[in-house]
Image (cartoon, rainbow, N blue to C red):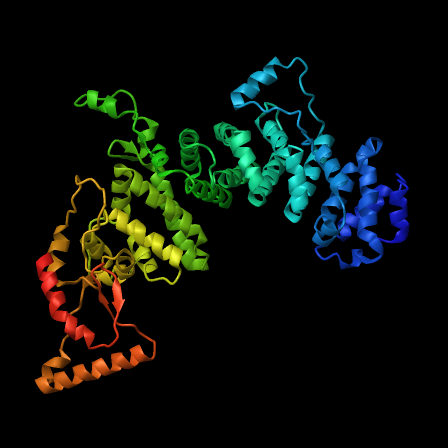
Length: 566
């Protein structure tokens, strides 16, 4: 900006200000590098000139344009760090109407707030469209400042802006979608970057209760626009931050989590079709939030079917009413539609990963939730096992070959990505009720060897402390029984028979020679650090060998111990 335009801004020449700001905002709309503004103190002078206009109530018609300029200037981290901007932050908080101060007392629950509003004799006046726009633009500027400056974050907390945002969110007054979105965006940035904000929002303000109620209200609306879905995404991100490290007592946290899980169940049921990309984003953030919910609360994802008792009473008679809506997907007298949504999301993410080579980060949360569900409830484990590990029929191909969920998870067992590999292994192992033999049956020993080594069960011993019901034994299909004898347990499938065994043409001396050659080659690989031969120690974990011939020395003892186990 040239000196003449800057001087007109400083002099508040109203006739020229709109044109100057319009040209500036258009020219620098995408500006990210502010090196040219650091000469002659230009950034600081422009900053002060703009805020002089913003502090003038008589020039309110120019405030939206001024805030657009401020939003551009707040991208310059260097200038924000090298200039004292506390007074300007106060002005933005005032324009955004979240400068609560210490006088604001937020009630303990949303219901108390509603009663408080009803008792208020003078209702709060509804802002005009122009005022709503100014509030939204001020929030955008604050979002940039909070992201760039730790001092600004602490100032926002000192002035109790969390209280004001939470009260505005929970109030009965209708707000524009843009305002709600940037309220949530500011809350997300504060709770993500400032630990003290998470503690205050959760403990002092009981924020999780307020946000759960607001989310429930959003879901009760007959339709959700793209803007509303974006607001819900931001709200779920805030709730994820708050629940990442719960500071409440276990009992309080349990009560809040139960209610929240029930609301998330309704959210998954409503948007589980993943019809649009925005709906998929909502489900993604809901799954992320579920990873923070304690396992004992996840039973709220499945409810008892409402018409089960009625069907039992009317058994043998024709029912006049249609089945209840909750029985759209009934399994063992429980509605498991939420689990079906999670599996549908998992399948879509797996398909997307293969076509677009997307990151594994989308898979880790849904696998974590499925593990917690399988561990927490017998019915959920039964349903997930039926979907992921159905009874085996065709064992002609290796477990990792194919496009079913079991095939995908078996492929993950040998991935270098440790988080995804370990989550997949744990899910499969839990669905097998931590039974080693069953795990080998569905995945093959080779794929599961990493899990067995980590848990110290390479020798196929029984897992100690596994607490699972014994009411559902593994049932083999007729097709599986017919092929069972030919299955290679290491591969997990029927090994194709060789037309000709090359060892049949060798004499005993030649076989012994080839065996010694193999030993020498393995020893060369060991000395080169390429492989590390090992034995299974008493703890069931691999123990490195000093020499390859130790395998031969320990073989008789291992065979004897294996016979004792069988």
